[in-house]
Length: 221
Image (cartoon, rainbow, N blue to C red; front, side, top):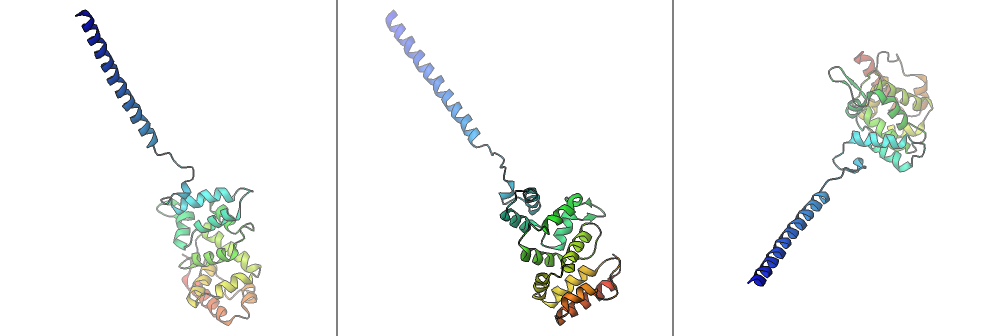
């Protein structure tokens, strides 16, 4: 009987140890599964479809600010740069109730990079500038600085910009020139530098005159 008792004891011990080993294995697998299912934050948030245009613009601003930037990075920066006046002021403007918009303090830096000589996709840039001008009106700070950058293009007698603007309908052209002349002190007549670059374009001259008259009538905002 003693031998049989010993055998039974050994058998029970083996079964018990097997059960414990099995449970530990399951727990280990469960822990591994938990680790596998952890969502690791991506270092490339800008590639996430849920990332906002603002976040993407900030990301690519960091890229194109680098001396080793590439044309493809500038193309992405251009893509996420505001495409409308509302978006422009939502990023760079100042609201009387909300205060500074997210990029207000660095607005000039962002705009400077958009017009940078390193940013070679000029036609895309000029088309986007015209889009921003639509339904736009003068504001201090970022909007005023944008108009300053546009004036530099016009002062340089940039025929590419004028050609692109000429390809738009009359309403779009008038809205651009209203935006350009709007402000505390619109000129009494079309400035000579503008006349020089539109002298052979009668339709553009009409748009310039209309935009200027609307800016003079609008007064200070």
